[in-house]
Structures are given as C-alpha cells and as structure tokens.
Length: 524
Image (cartoon, rainbow, N blue to C red; front, side):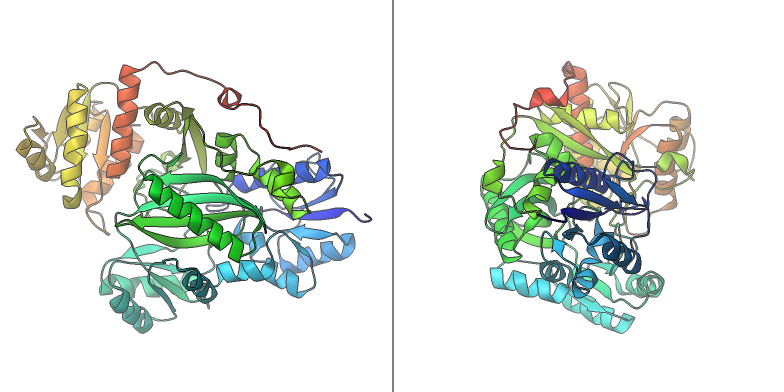
C-alpha cells in the first residue's frame, strides 16, 4: 500500500476536562501504527505531553487544533486518514467539518459521532433501542428553561452545550436559582443552547469502556462510581470490578452497551455513562471516543485498549487480535482523582457536576478496602488509625451516617459532631461530644482542627448554597492536611480503608504481578 500515513489529532493544551489520559491514548496509537509499518503524524500543541516528544511519532506538527490548521496539514501530508478518537472532545468536534471537507476519518464514522453528540438524534436512537434516558430538553432563555423544569420536575441538571469538563454545569432545585443560572450561563454558552436534564438524585453512576470493529464488540471494563450521582465523572472515584451491582444489572448494562455500539457501527473505542435508580437503567451519554478512564481500565485488565483500537481502525479484526471477551479480573482497582485544593487558600473542597480534578491515581489489591486505601495514599490523603472524628451531615444523610459512626467507634475513634448530627447518633446509643457552631462559642471545630485534635472530617453539604460554617470547615481540612470526605458513599469507603489499615498488612506488588501473560496480539 502506498502512502501509509496516518494523522493523529491530540487534545491540545491541558486544562480541566482535557487531561493527560488522552495523551496516553495518542501515544498508544502512535506505537500501534509503527508496529503496523505506518508513518505516524502527530498534531498537538502541548509541550507537557509525551505525544509531542520527538521520538513518539515519525513527524510532529506543533500546531493549534483548529479546522484551518488541521486541513492545511492534511493537504501537505495527504494521509490515508485521520484519527480523532484519542484527543478528547477537541478533535472529536472536528470530525464532522473534516468529513465535509472530504477527509477520511478513521474509526467510528463522523455520521455516528454526530448521532451521539446531537441530543435529538441520540434520543431517537435510544427510543429505537428501547433504552431509557432522563427527561431532557434544550432552551435559549429563562422562560423556556422554566417551562422545561416544570415539565421535567426539580431537581434539574442545567449546563451549556459544547463545553469541556462540565464547565458551567449546575444542579438546580428551584426557579429562582434557575433564573440566576440562565443569566450566568449565557456568558459560557454564547450562541449555543442551554441543556436541561432531569437530575436523578442518589443514583449510582456507571462508566463503560468498550471496543468494536463494527461486527464484534467487547467490553473492556464496567466501573462503578463510589460517589453518588451529581459529581462529575472526572472527579468521582471509581472501582473495577463493580462492588454493589447485581449480576442481572451487569447483564443489562452489557446488553444495552452492545446494542448502542452495533447501532453506531462502533469502530475503535467508546465510553458510555449510565445512572441506576430504583433498579432502572438510564443512559446519560455516549462518547464515541477514548475516555479519560481508558488508561485505568487498560492497566486493570492488562490489555492496551487504545493500541488495539488503533489497529482495528486500520482494518484489523477483534478476533484477529485475540481480544474476544470481557476479562474477569480477580483483583480490585480503585481510580481516585487528584485535586489542586492545597494550592488555593480558602477554597471549598465540595464536589459537584463541574469538574475540578487535575489528575488521577490508582490503587490495586485483592480486596476493595486495600485498593481504596492505596488510592488514597497515592492521592496524598493519609487515613488515620486512631484519634477523633468530626461528623456534620445534612438531614437526608443522618440515617446512613449512623452506621459509619458506629464502625468508627468500634475501631476506637472518638466522635465529635454538630448538634443535629449528634442527636441522630445519641438516639442510636453512641457517645458523642457536641461542638458549638463556629459563631456560637469555643472551642469549636476550627479550634480543634488547628490544635491537631481532629484526624478525620465527614461533612456533607446542607444545600445548594453551603452555609458559611461548612465552607470554613472544608477549607480548613486542606489547610491542616486533615483526611476528609464530603459524601456518605465516600465516608463508607473511607471507613473500609481505615479498617484495612488497622487490621491488615498492606502488600505491595507490581502491576505486572496481577496479570497473567496477555493472550492478545499487541505487536506486529
């Protein structure tokens, strides 16, 4: 074959929502193409990446990822095709305009990408397949948003279209908040519409990464979010394999994923995000590209998904590559996000739909508690083995926090709480010291944290607009480097990690020791 050139579009400059995980995928693509004797051409403009190292690809264009610049490079190089799947949303947004200019897009077609990205077309696809989606709509103004929210029912998730990392996304519980949001979002969204979705409170979120060659489709991994719905997938801790989902639900997820992959004629990688509420499976979104979880899944299962996806794009078949079925791992891995909070004095560490993390780490072991503990250590959070715990949670979390507190008490910790949380604990027979609110007396929680007398803080937000006390508490945990969590599910996982730290010996093994020799063809 003449002219065996392939252009890979990178992700551009790093920013929230466009992380280094995509650089990993671009590098894997370059390595795969080299193995197949293709000339690799990388287009990226981020000096902090491995994909822009001079020995990663055969040729590097350090240029902006705009349609004009990319077309000029294509005209000069005349490649066999262009890969847009591995650089995140930025190159994916170029797929349709490039296709309209006659460029050969390798992998999932631009038409299929457009179906997944266009809300109306995607809804039609889900209706055709008999899959559920949270009620939603689009609008350009407050009146339209108000009508949609009334129809859908509060709370709603509102967000601008065509932004990265959940920028400008917010969970709205009432009309006055909605009006304020629409005014603010106009600056983010410009001419694009505002998206309004039903928010599924307390739902379990699930991510699926899979690979396909238009005929056969294989799931790389099904990941369960540790935090409940409402926290951006880039900020949420995830566990693989799942640890609370039934086999029936997992089978439903597999079936739905393969249905969508077949309908979209998946060629390469795809990420799907689900929410589970009241035993109903809802499709949140489909990304016909590599996701930020691909490196994590690849390391957990011992299969280089991005590398295989690249070979599929240039004509290889899944059966030919030997990766024909989902791998059942015997270990547990936890992906944890890394946040820059210690660099910003006074910042609130509460998580929400707008992404805040700047990286991620992984913990791997034979059980969940050990894997979670390792992920926290890697992320810079040291869990205590003794001392005092401060608990202050919203009303809806008070029942759940009782079990968390009991476990901590059984592990030898002393309990401190605000009056409302303390009352719930006392009703369940647990000794707890009540602390006054910050403006009501001393010593209060800030005094105890300053004096090094608090080793763990469990604080869930009381509402959309957090109270001043809550913000002060959460910003001080960063200042004094105190372990903390802001969700009940996170608190449960934290206690699990602490119990492991107290009762078990932590073993350190290389990631290679968790995998048998892969039975797939990854080289030429």
